[in-house]
Length: 281
Image (cartoon, rainbow, N blue to C red; front, side):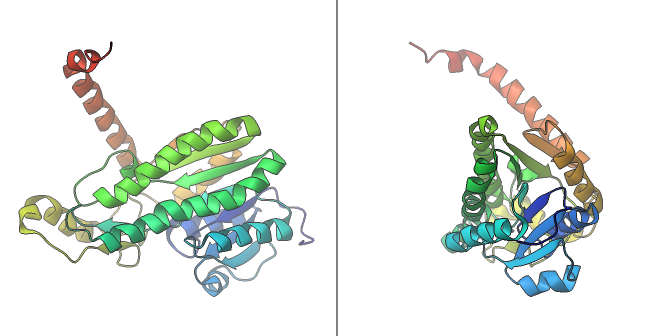
C-alpha cells in the first residue's frame, strides 16, 4: 500500500487517456485526490499526466472481466480503498439500425454495457465492505432521447440508465451512491474516428435521415457547445455533494432534449390514455 494517506478521495476512472476521462482525471488530481487511471495502454497515461504520488496508471480492457477484478483489487491494495468509480470507457456507432452489422453492434455493447458491468462488479465488493462509495456511470444525451443514426449507440446508453436506476436502489441501503451523468455534446474528440465509428454500409432510403446526421456529425466536430473542463469541475462538485442526484444532465442541449422528450411523452400518454387504461381486469 502506498504511504500517501492525505488523499481525500480515491477515484478509479476508466477510459482515462483522452476525452472527458482525461479531463476528469486531471481535475481530480488537481483537487488533491488520488486516481487509479485506466486505459488499454497504461504508458499513455504516464505520458499524459506524468509520474506523481496520487496517480496509479493501470492497463485495463474493460471487456476483460478478470482484468477488471484485478485492477479493482490492485487499486485497493495500493491506496487502501476506492471512493469513486467513474465508468467512462465507451465509444459511439453512427449509422442506421439496419445499416449496422452484427459485429459492429456486439462490439459497442461489449464495451459500453458489458464493460461497464465488468468494472462495476469488480469494484462493488470493496465499496460494500466499506459501506461507502460513489458509482458514476457516464451516459449521454442519447441515454435519455434517441435519434436517427445513433440508435445502436443510444440503446447502449439506455441500458446504462436502466442499470444505474437499479443500482441506485440496490446500493442505497449499503451506503453506496449511484449517479448516471448525461453529457450533451462536449468539445472533445468524440466525433473523431477514434471514438465514433461510422458504419460503412449505406442504404439510399436513409439518405434524408441518417445520411444528414452523418454529414452533421462531421460539421459539428470541434464545434460542440460543451466545455469539457467545466464538465470535469462539475464532476468534482458532484462527488462533493452530500446527496448527489440519480441523474445529472450536463449541458443546455441535454436539458433541452429532456424537456422536449418529457413534453412529447406527456402529450402522447394523454392522447392514448383511454386505450392504455382499458386493458385492466
